[in-house]
Image (cartoon, rainbow, N blue to C red; front, side):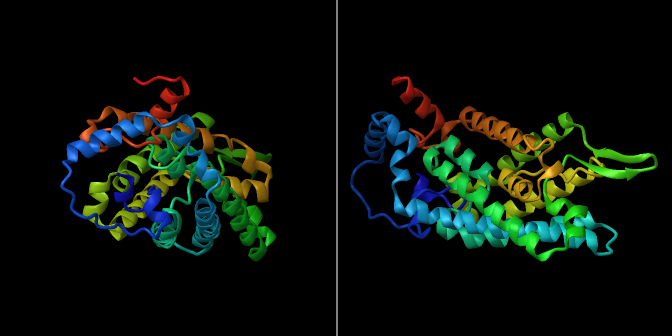
Length: 326
């Protein structure tokens, strides 16, 4: 079933070029094929479910290069957009920034999808691994590549902007609070930790539910087409950035990150206050991914999964870990 997906989470077809092959007609009843496939998946070992062979696959490591470079370009472009928008004299910088972010993300996804499936975000990789579309091993490799790429992107940005811009805009990183000059000396301004965490959880879950879901569901992805699906992903992210930066009206808060790697890259390169509350940009998305996975298990299987689900499904991994055939 995973081979029918379009972009973002496809394991096999994206590595081989992202082309869906037309299968020859078979006289074998579909039910029999499904039964055989189900039996194979039930008998899979823990190593197979975790995707340990992916660690030794050259194709997976080659695909991770797409994630690394894609993440580097993403960080450089997004942070440049943020800085440029607020430096320009526009009446609604948040709106302009959100529109540009939506365009940039769509273009980058279209560029990276044929190479690795177009994740360039630990949220997508981890969520896809929980659902079972890719293995946890592949997800970890991708997430490490994304973090390294984010660091490279932040270094590239640091090389082309002045020290004043770096300090003023925190290198375009994810911030909860900043230290600003006040009437009686420096003061800390920003958002409370609890509010920032809830915003991160809600925005990331909406991101998965309202856009990534279409890429996971092979029927919707096929019906809508690659360009449409990725455009919706970019649009939803742009809207969430606009909402999270507008609804709080708090200076010092950079909005929902929804991409831990992007926040991590700037924090490593810029340091300082970017580490304050940095855990929120990891914990929030993790909770959202788990909540989204629970949602996929609650809905009727026919609306998403094949009869036997994906072989890397997290619940299947847990069952294999404890030796359960239930």
